[in-house]
Image 1: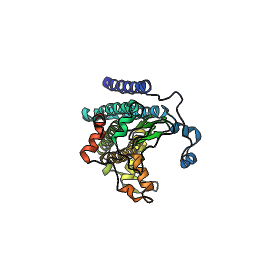
Image 2 (image 1 turned 90 degrees about the vertical axis):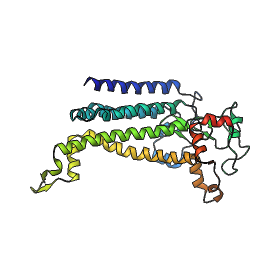
Image 3 (image 1 turned 45 degrees about the horizontal axis):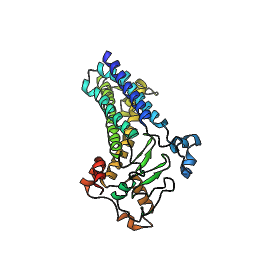
Image 4 (image 1 turned 60 degrees about the vertical axis):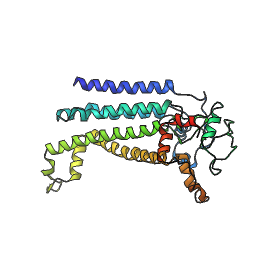
Amino acid sequence: MDFLWLFTFYLLSIIMLVSIFCFVSGRSRSRLDRIFGRAEEMLSLVLPTWLQSWFQTRSGAFVVLHLILDALVFAEYTWEVFGYCVELEMHLRFLLLPYILISVNLYFFYKCCVTDPGVITKQNVTLFTQVYGYDEILYHIGNVCKTCHLCKPARSKHCGVCGCCVQRFDHHCVWVNNCIGALNIRYFLLYLFSLTLTVLSLAWVITAFLLQVVLLSHMMTAAYVNIDGQEHVMNIAVIIQHLFLTFPRIVFTLGFLIVLVLLVGGYGCFVFYLCLTNQTTNEWYKTRRHASANRSLTDKGYSKGLKTNIQEIFLPHSFYKKGR
């Protein structure tokens, strides 16, 4: 099993390198990160003060938590699932697929952490102002940021966490400790999809392993005696209970992965939909919040067709050079 230790060392090395690069290359926009004026009312009711501060300031806490979760899941996969699957002579390429996908995912995670999302400065504010027209509904001509003291381009927004205005602002993501904007939305989208594929591959391998256990032990045709002494044919609920008692960490990990793939995969599809329709999360939220009071919000948008919308996401620098 020397190759097992080799892959463990490889994975942990990648995670450590990503951690170092995220902190060393991370752009601190100010030595003292700005704190929101006040938290959302519902957030303040649900979360304790110490946890709210993590959401409201630039902090690497969630970056570290993200990497710890990656390490824990792959530690369980490497030291338990992988070993069992090798003993069952499952195909090696099938078992190595999650390692390849997590390597790709960590690369896009790193890019999300350190890439400039499109911070508006005195040097580029004129260029950014020329890219989008003002709809005079969500974005108005002559609107000046009270903090940055710069004229706000259409589709930009000031991020109270990072203390700057961001072009085509989507949202601030605590998991990557960075804003998601015009210049890094492509990395965020690829990060979500690569994470979804990584989780799916892990769940796929674990499910295949558990099915192998069930088939090789002939559980489907077996019978059991309940506490009343009555004999019953095995059913799915009993099999799952037996597997959980036999492989508790593996079954728990599978449950966690299933929930995660639904959450991340669903959110990834939502972000992809926004990209195809040339919307941001910030605009989508505001449109639905105020559409009942202003029906014209639903009639105006920045979509220029599917091809141009995709180009704007995945080739932002060429798009902005044209000054559309």
